[in-house]
Image 1 (spheres, rainbow, N blue to C red):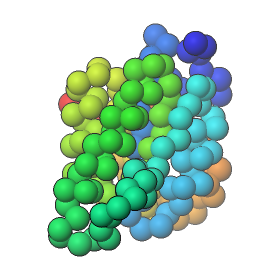
Image 2 (image 1 turned 120 degrees about the vertical axis):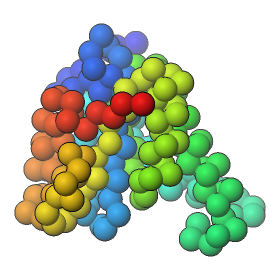
Image 3 (image 1 turned 180 degrees about the vertical axis):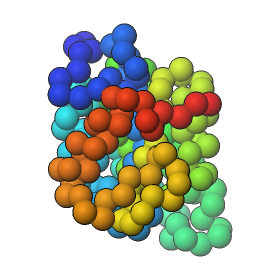
Image 4 (image 1 turned 120 degrees about the horizontal axis):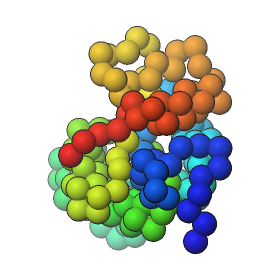
Length: 163
């Protein structure tokens, strides 16, 4: 397998390793186009959408906002995290779109710890940064400019999370 990167950082921090970046967009700041552009800049890359792991449930699917859907949501998110880190341990640079952060982040952190693959986390948010180094203000940025900003930050390890 070709484990070199072209046009972007190795999310795993070098040595031909893969890694995972979780893009969160709680407010419609453009995570889908940015995730697609970011995955196009990384090589080899995988683009996953966490909500697709809910959509594949054929029978018994509940609307995810209902309290009784918690088990379904946790299971689907765990499947997304496991898939992301399976690709990462295979040397792929993985971009994951995720709607919500706190419980999702813990799920991805557990997989990062279990596999040893790097985990990056960025919140796309229109408006001033919330004080978190993981927030990217997308107010005046196009998806292309946001992608370039993220690539630079990923190269510098700005969005890298520890366990």
